[in-house]
Image (tube, rainbow, N blue to C red; front, side, top):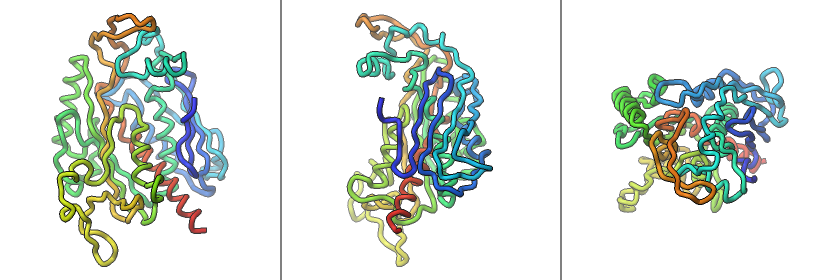
Length: 354
């Protein structure tokens, strides 16, 4: 199986399955001499871990990261950083009913067709549990590019949308509610709705908005390695993501060029920022902002018709512990993937100037 590594100079490779002994990763290319705050890395993992509130999966995993190499007395050595996260609360029997059955909108069927074998216990390698490794890599990347601020939050759940501009929001409130929405009133409505959806045995999707501040000018390469193209790839590689838009996005298609152009100030900044901080694939120093769309979780606690490995039509119903809405736990994953992209381009920029 290919495709388990992300990045060029700052590269993360992950391994492990949802119900194996552990998941983990190797970070290659992290500069030496970076003093790491290990508590901050664990804090980001805690934001992603299951069982943290009543509106997420109740699988109880401590998600404690153990570093095996590349760090000495809290400082990076420049060698590969190896780490593991133990899978402590496995209930593989929750998946015995789908051993020979393909769950609708999951990777079951495509994995079986591609590899001829699949780990049906929670989806194995296709499980979103793999994203815990990305959070570790991203948390370290944040400390490499520590002057760059990356903030993500829940912008919508189903039809409920946060109708405030970023300048009106207090980002310190993101962690004040289980939905991770910086507007308390909207957060309460979202939480109530997610609980209602869960009581119906159903799921719902939503969007995450990410804002990146203090980005230096010049990150990104023209043509195939545009900064926003790499951000798009990073976000679309996250489980359940179905859409990515940066800057004005699809709304920008409704404007005329005279309305959409970001006119310059004398210092090179722009009066507006419909470009989303990136022009010609290169950062221009303005805030980068984008939206990531997450589909409803595919496992629902309702009966559905599907097929089995023999091609027969059968009926199945989800069992076990699953998220009614993945968006709140996706916040640290979006931040992590953004950090991995920016750290990689930041290092590329340093190399290009040597």
